[in-house]
Amino acid sequence: MEIIYVYTRKRSEFGRPCSFSDRPAEVNVDIPPDPSLASSFILRNPVDSYVQHTSDMSEHEVNTERVEVESRGVNHVEGGWPKDINPQEVEQTIRFRKKVEKDENYVNTIVHLGTLMEHCVKQNNAINIYEEYFEEEEMVEVEDEPPSAKTINVIRDPNVTKRTATHLSWHPDTCKKLAVAYSSLEFQQNMKNMSFDSYIWDLENPNKPELVLRPSSPLVSLEYNPKDSHVLVGGCYNGQMAYWDTRKGGLPVEVSAVEVSHRDPVYGAIWLQSKTGTECFSASTDGQVLWWDIRKLSEPTEMLVLDITRKGLLENALGAVTLEFEPTMPTKFMVGTEQGIVIACNRKAKTPPEKITSTYSGHHGPVYALARNPFYPKIFLTVGDWTARIWSEEIKESSIMWTKYHLSYLTDGCWSTVRPAVFFTTRSDGTLDVWDFLFKQNDPSLSLKVCDEPLSSLRLQDNGCVVGCGSKLGTVTLLEISSGLCTLQRNEKMLATAMFERETKREKILEARHREMRLKERARSEGQESEVEERLVESPQEVLDRARKEFFEVIEAELQRQARAETQHPLGKVKDRVGEEAAAAAAQGEESQLPKDKEEEEE
Image 1 (tube, rainbow, N blue to C red):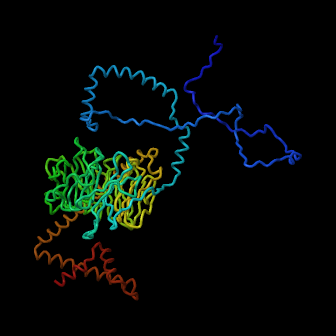
Image 2 (cartoon, rainbow, N blue to C red):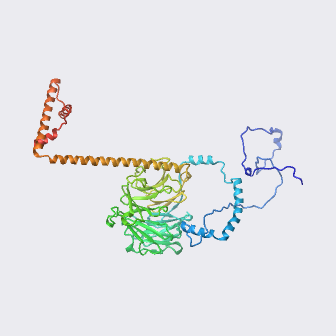
Image 3 (cartoon, helix red, strand yellow):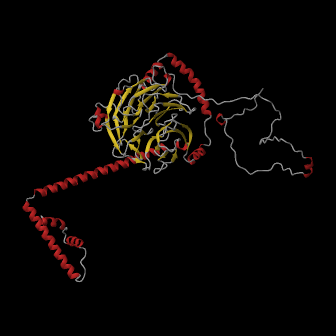
């Protein structure tokens, strides 16, 4: 067969959407009604009709088998490492890569796979199957949506005697499990029948806990191990540390000895970035920070006393209420104290006094929450008394931004994991506030009354869309945040950076001005002291002569004032004496020193 003509078309034009345009409607057929046909009308019941806007191409019908179709996708993450290689350690992975690249089979395999990949890449370049044609309209839709949140789940303490949900921890791999620590933090309010248990909840079955954790003392803090999701570490009310392996049941695998543990409740317990994945550290109101290896909880590996006088005395230590650790800064950590002071520390300092690098003071009460911004680690958030404050590491004197003073106490807070300008706070009146300071600085973008009792704890999922709020009665409410508050906005990072830099610069200028005023005040006070000293050096005769001279100058000024008043107003009334004495003294360039002269006369 001879090919007469070849039709060609660009590969990139395949699958293009139709380009429709508006035009006025046109009438193709107009059938007027015929009244004579009304008598032959037959009512059909039931009626089954269909409408099709395209012409019928065929009148043949075929009964086919029903086919069920489901969408499937592949999510590729880096993996395939040998068991002895930790993919989180850069040095180990680089060493393993070099070893593999020297293998002969490696080059042959890559060359073979390269041709297959090249074919797929060329296919993808021909047409973008992921291209969004209505992206601008979607952006406008998201921006116009008002901030909102809806309750998706409520988990209640199953015990009759309700306890406070003091800490929440999301499962690191799947966000369908939540570990909740329950304890009563009110002093001497523990009842005899109060349970010590804490729970791991499966969100798909919120009526019954998936696992009951049975510590020897109620848990105040509880954290999943980010490297091994089966392992959790908990800080107890009596100061002990314990860890669980969910594969081994609800009893702790090991508990630290009382004599080497904290003396007060453990308010903070955080896992460290380590090769073994078994190291953690804890802080308590007894003023100590202790480092632990869960393989050996018989004694802490290291200790730091939070004495800001840097003498290392436990009686001077400040009680720790919250703990902060950023994995990207492995040697640094921060501690929020009962006294409203935030202590910045460096674990790798040579001596214990040098481990306390700086302090930040700005709250009137305990610092209940302390968190670094995930996008800007040098910016951190503190929550205490009636305000939340944003600090820069560079400014020690004061915070760079702060919220208004609320009527009720703030109890917890955290940054959004997806938006650098958004953070969350909880209040003792049961309200959750969502702040977006690029949108509004004076008030929260969203205030939601979660429950009637005080909220005690707060934890955001890594995807930034679901937040868990724990209350004083042990109820954990899970809220789904609207997409506008958990979707990174256009230019948001740039705007947030500009705002942080501007506020930091402003505080630096104010700090320099305050320092200058303090120096002037000190210099002025020192100058006044030197004048007093000079006067003290004068002999008694000199003091007497000076006092006599000042006294007669005042008498002379008074006589002149009276004579002037009589000549100008012979019948006028005498005005306020003290005011006129001051005016007469000022007219002659002399200061009125009547009070001092009267005292000297009396002497």
